[in-house]
Length: 181
Image (tube, rainbow, N blue to C red):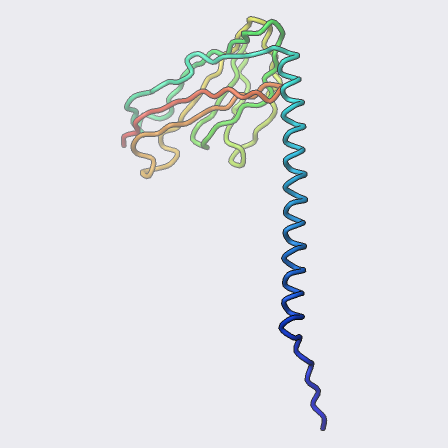
């Protein structure tokens, strides 16, 4: 009976293999990092062109709202915000999302209530596609459920609603409260 033993690579051979693997890894990292950076630069340049060409902007009033002390037992609290198109051209609100499942937003315009818009991954986030005329406004109702997190949700909270226009510009409105049992 013969036993065959594979020869072990010499330490010099093993070093060459490890150096080659390390070199290939470094080149791959540099290649991908270079491509990602160039795509971000191109995207940023295109975004700047789109925003400067359209010259649109919108603001939210109030930008922040504190409900103060609210009780879990009393249920949901609501606050109306105003989204104002400060630009000289119509602007389209493309998407509305929230920072937490306990918060929902609704577009209110001409007695029509559209929504709810919530947190991505926890509820559907349909596109809004609501146009606000130049110098026009629309309402944004925000509803917060203080019981959504149960007893762990007692204490100070801060939540946000993100409103994105067709150019990708995002404005944020914030709510806060102190939740009691």
